[in-house]
Image 1 (cartoon, one colour):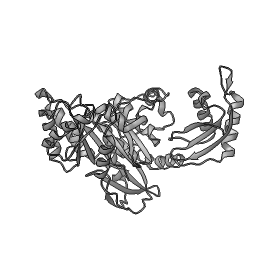
Image 2: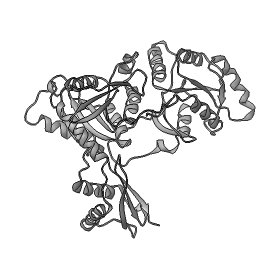
Image 3: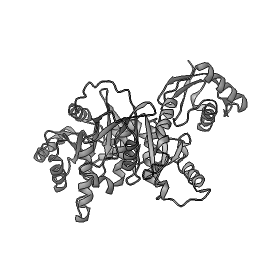
Image 4: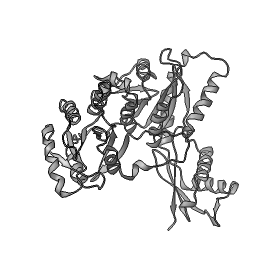
Length: 435
């Protein structure tokens, strides 16, 4: 079951980013040494009192100029559609403004619970300023200070009280996968083409997202579930025109999938949004397949596919482990290969390797390229074991973890991949100090 989603909305300069960072904590500050991973800081996982949820920063809603009204409406509607709870941030020093009332009016018409956070209440005396925001008609306003972290506990208590109850569903034994990508890469066409090829459709059940459908089908003697991201909803045009918010929809699908198909448009090539969305699937540790759609429309010679694949490897260096398949939803070219490939990636993603075998591989790797020495201190690897799957996670017990440079970590990962088939799945190598 997907985690609840909380969206932060409000006009500019009310402190949304500060509050976003406070709630998300250190997890938003993860830096990856691998080149090519692009980030757009609108999403982060968060937790309060043991309850995990997704946090979305929708950016400042600008109301000063009439030409921005469509963008304003788009952002507010996206927050309404995607979130289980919305936090409306207002400025306690400014009081209620026309911009606050406009956003509140848009939120008030939805069924999504809204919690009002009155920011910049930095001391006890100014708490009375929060009372003015009862006028918005959205319930109790919560005085907070993003700069000092005051009042956030009460705010988050109110947020998680509004989370929907999670039903006790029967276990789902299907292999869940999703198609993600920026708008107009052909996700809907691929879903329809794949389902059209299958003679046995088991059922259609309501998904974890409003109005979305997760579709079950059987192929290659395996029960699959396509986690919907491509279906156009009531406000579908908003998503197509507001491209960066496709990330919100992709995140829900990624979270609920074992394998993710990153769909590219062969006609348009690779865009920054492609790398951004794929980066989230990589960070989530999911099995990944890069699917190049609309391949039938590209003029080809003997080198076209090889050149396009080289471009993908250059732009997605952090996805070197992901297989690439060139398909066409229109002609159904190679679509029949996808179910077996998804099964293979899922098997690799959940694969567990004996510690003895891993230690042999690592010792052989050290024999070929000794561990690095940094300022007279030499890295020593004593023991290696796999501690988790999905993705495969390997712990290296060492003398000093900080001596494991990312370049040597990558070397060890490559040596493991040479001996064991981990195609399509990221590997996580963690250094721990031996006690």
